[in-house]
Length: 219
Image (cartoon, rainbow, N blue to C red; front, side, top):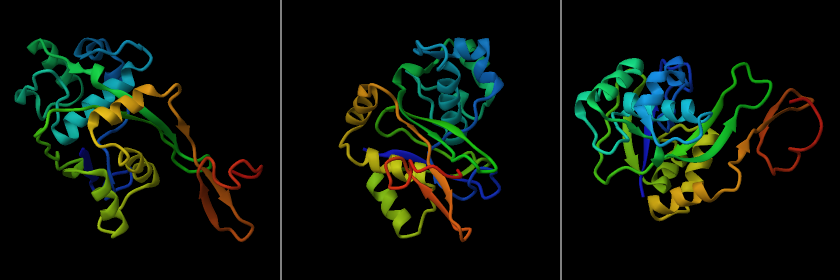
C-alpha cells in the first residue's frame, strides 16, 4: 500500500516546506449547489462540504481525480470552474470512496488553529500524481513506512498529525484493509493535543493518553 504525499511550497501559510497529505480549507464553493451536483455518494449532508473539499483539493494540488472515469480535461481547474466542468461533462467526484479516518484539532492557545478531517480514498494502481507547482512542489506515492523513515532521517519535515496518521496506516498491508478499518470505527476519533507551558517558560505538546494530558492547568 502506498499513500500520496505532497510537499507544501515554502511560501505556504500552512507549514511551508512540510510533507503532508493533499488537502486544504473548506471554501464557499464546497458549500454550494455546484458541489452538491459535482460530488456524488455522500449521504451525510453535513459532511458534504468536507468531502467536497477533500476531493477538490487532491485534484487541484496533485492532479488526482477520484471518479469512476477520470477525465484529463478537468486537470488544472479550480473551485467552481472544476465543479461546473464536471457537471457539464456529466461526471462527478466519487465521495462514496471516502472513509473518514480522524479529526485533528490544533492545541488551544496557538495563534492559528485548524480543525482538520482526514479521509482515505482508494484509487486505481498506477494512478499518476503531479504537483501544481503553486501550493505544492512535489507529489509522491510512497509506503507509510518509507515516508516515516525519511522523516526520521530528516530528509522530510513532518508535523505530528501527519506522522501519527502514517503510523496508523503502516499497520495495513492493503488499501482495502485501511479503508475497512476507518469505516469500522464506532466513532471517528477527535484528537486535540494539549499545549503545556512550564514554569520556566518551556512548551510541551501532549497527546491524548500521555501522562499529564488530563491535568488541570493552562492550555
